[in-house]
Every structure is written in structure tokens, then in C-alpha cells.
Length: 106
Image 1 (tube, one colour):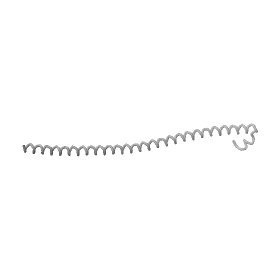
Image 2 (image 1 turned 90 degrees about the horizontal axis):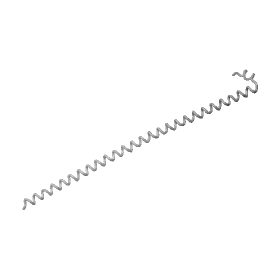
Image 3 (image 1 turned 180 degrees about the vertical axis):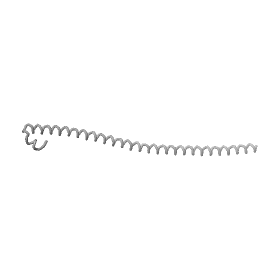
Image 4 (image 1 turned 60 degrees about the vertical axis):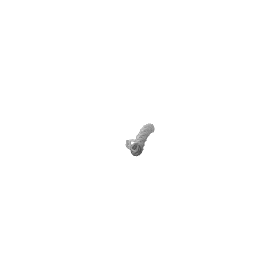
């Protein structure tokens, strides 16, 4: 509406226009608040997804470290077992040699 048309309007018509503008302003303000709330919700979801991804990466690191530690432990146990087996075989050889020697001397 032009300024000239506004000047021709009466007081009641101007008040009606003002009320209509106020209602429209309130409706727009509500839409803005709803849009801001939706945006904040989406941002929170994105932050949560980021946090979950970070936690997942950290857990992967923990699992990798645990796997390496388990493998190292297993290797150490296998090495110690092999050393004990070798020592037992050597001791058995010595006992057999002494037994044969003792048997030959009798």
C-alpha cells in the first residue's frame, strides 16, 4: 500500500491494519523460534554423532592395544614353554646317559 492510500484510510482501518501487522509479526516470530529450535536440535544431533565417532575411534585404539598385549603375552608364554621343554629334554638326555653309563659299569 502506498503512502497516499494510507493517508486516505480512516482511524479504524489503520488500527485494523496495525492489528493485522501485529498478528503477522507474531506468526513470523513463532516460525522463527520453531526454526531456531529445529536448528539447535540438528546441531545437537551432529555433535552427538561426532562424539560417538570419536568414542568409536578411541575404542578401536583401546582394542588394538589390547590385541597387541594379548599377542605379546601369548608369544612370551610360548617361548617360556619351549625353554622348559628344551631344558626337560636336556635333563632327560643327561639322566639317560648316566643310567646307561651306570648299567655298563655293572
